[in-house]
Image (cartoon, rainbow, N blue to C red; front, side, top):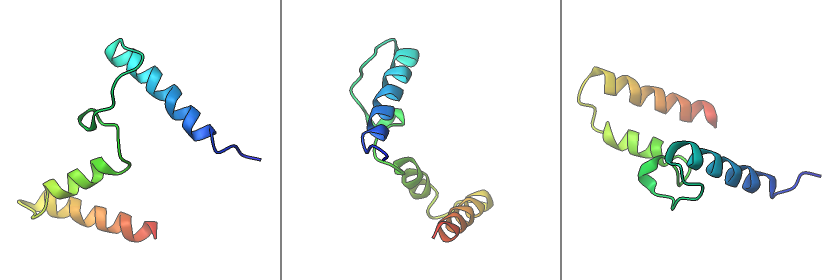
Length: 73
């Protein structure tokens, strides 16, 4: 039987490890600006930053995100 606490324990362990390596502090207050937080928040910010597409590369990125979303479902 798989424990539902395993992901939570893994997350806390990862936060302690990363916090210790990056900032020298074992426990830090979680800020959305440091790359941690709500799942897929970085993806949403990225897509929001390239809408409307300003150049050809932004258009390609939007198409890639669209295909990733379609293939995921």
